[in-house]
Image (cartoon, rainbow, N blue to C red; front, side, top):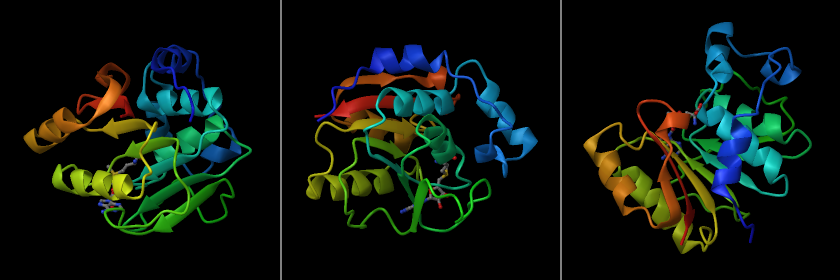
Length: 189
Ligand SMILES: C[S@@+](CC[C@H](N)C(=O)[O-])C[C@H]1O[C@@H](n2cnc3c(N)ncnc32)[C@H](O)[C@@H]1O
């Protein structure tokens, strides 16, 4: 199990800078890339996590355009990261991106091959899908010691309730690194 240090990750995220000419960003809209350039952002928190813990296996639930997956991959260019979505809406990455293993699946009941060390949960935001997904991972014994990031934890009452229920050591609302809809982190216990 990896001994994650959340304070260290947040500190490191303030040092992250992106070279938007890097081929990794070749498919990204100029407009969207401005989110990467903010002094504090959850993209930088993901990149810093990948840089500090290159041995960690990353699993993102909810790929959408691929922006967050790219942020993680930027910090860990030599290895593969795992990301999934119920539909394929990737705009910023294609199948030719070798470092990214994309699966089109419903994460509420998907059976994973590999236990993650770092999880990023960013799906429907209705609270119930998040609860079902966490229970699915828990059943597979895939949450112990996992560093978990949750997006949009205050976007609505259902997500606020879900966030309040999350069992985690060092559980913290780090919305100041995310966006106004909330961003949370914790180590599963
Ligand atoms: C907010 S977007 C993810 C954004 C992405 N993580 C990022 O930061 O760029 C949410 C995504 O979750 C996907 N999603 C919703 N329910 C899902 C499920 N049960 N299994 C997998 N993906 C799901 C949606 O299709 C949508 O693309």
